[in-house]
Image (cartoon, rainbow, N blue to C red; front, side, top):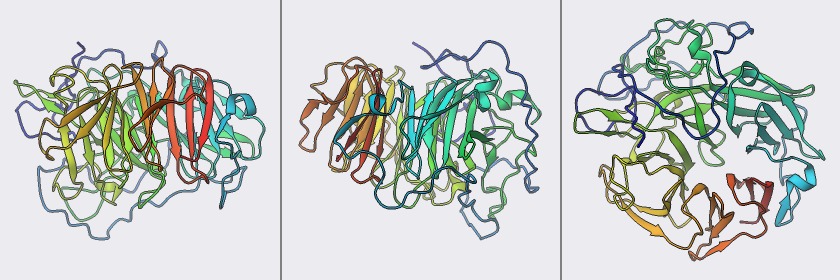
Length: 475
């Protein structure tokens, strides 16, 4: 069994915590799901460093304290990616209204490994070192190769849509034996992480490598921000820039409606970071502690949005549910607990395995009837029933009837259905009455990704399999 000791592990057994402090312990690691990074260190970036951020004071957060957020620093507003080559769509989306359309056949999108949609209904595609976009009205996608981190030899992992003409592309880099770095010019900060790309009249271009950490100063507690390096240091811990713990982006989800519509959450080898435009706050994660007081985190693959906007997080060991504060700058704050209330702190299902054993959560969704479901890479589909917020053990109910226990993804839709991606058994649907059926309209045996967009009319479910991309409508 792979054993992960969290790099922000504590030396003393304490209550479950979701965010890392300043005390860290190196962690042995093994390869994770997905492609391995290129051999050797990539060359340094040739782009000029971004302009310095306003001078702020570096702090380490205290254990507790009342949150008093005066209007000292405004939260970042949504930035425009600049001129784009397709207008923002208003009203109904421009795509075919058939209940099932094979986009690989009709639009020649091929067999990509990732799919996303932005606010203008541009369909983004990820295929190795290539990024593609199928614009409304186009008959085939536009492609660009070796942009940003891909051009430096890093392997791409996921793609998420953003505002009109913008997408976020995740990359893979191996964990560091020692994540604490002494200088913000250390080249390891620029490995893996996340690129922001944009669609312009001349094609797809790199907007920037995400670096703008946004975190309220907890020590001062006056609404000001913690200090960040004056150069691009990538996706690093927001509470202490010295720690480069988020190295490989493993999953992502865009908030499709509600108060936080348009924000993006990315899950990594270490936790879940929240993104608004070009700003981010890193990070939170469910954890558990062993008898020696060592903190264990696990790789976070499953990240979803509940019906009420809660963030659903599942890693290889545990899972959690958090209600995010409206302020991006306090996403990683663990106290007071009323700031980002947790419906489930850091739990597991004893019906699946004992806590030290991996459960391999790969999907976490809530259906319209309020029920929670977890999908495992090895142990099938489970309904999760909350016993209590702080209880280590929650109740698990095994869902029978699927052809395999190897699940890859979940998507809850507005008609009350839960779509289930399998490895080897194709796409399945559990309708509102909890009846399971195979979705024969979708070709392919291995489901790679499910993306649901309720903003389309009718709603669109993007299903990516080993046979290509199919879009289902009306669920």
